[in-house]
Length: 332
Image (cartoon, rainbow, N blue to C red; front, top):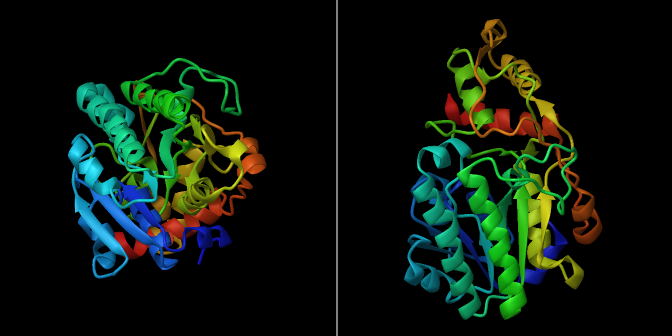
């Protein structure tokens, strides 16, 4: 289904931490569709068993229910892995502001456990989910990998510390890593429920329920919304690249265009109205801006294009068309 690069993983085993989550389960699916052995490590704190239910009967899939805060669980998961796609984390800026200690435990202590376990198991490459939140208060657009500001939330601090630890593990132990700074990823299996739901599935659910979606602020804040298939492409490229210059660094993972929250809500409204014309009449509401939110986000993807041959296929309109179709089927 995906890329010729996947042939390099033939007869190899890939560990996906957080494999029952939104991004993790999509990565598991792609690997399994290409006959690659997958180990999934998840404690189901935010991941969902229904996301991986279709995989459980597959010979190439192994589920380990465990927590990255437990070093022994990490060692068990890494024991037979050739590569690691580390997606496990506690996301959400608001959650980290409410509970910084748990966010720190999972995202920093858990990350360090995984690095140690992967290093000790002789894992060939460790690709991990970094975050665009690392750019913090740096205002210039587009965001370029080697220029960041000060973090604006506990979550942002944890994701930056991940990058520092990965760099030290390369310099100290010659352990190969690649960090992927995700920019507002969306797509199938992204959970619309809960206090910390991402904006796109949350808006979709509200429109489907004939509820008015709420935008924090006047709607002028903008994001580089990135469809899940672009993210999968980057993970596969990072996992399989044979370009040594591409290793032990970080990359933006985005499409390279920005959309305001008001534009996003309008696009979703238009696409969902094709299924239910009553959605056309729903008015968008506004509340105050959220603490810790970055006003604008736009990625330069030149580095990824140059060193990894990244070529994102889905812009915001194409990605939303795929996502809305999936949500309409699964949220009704």
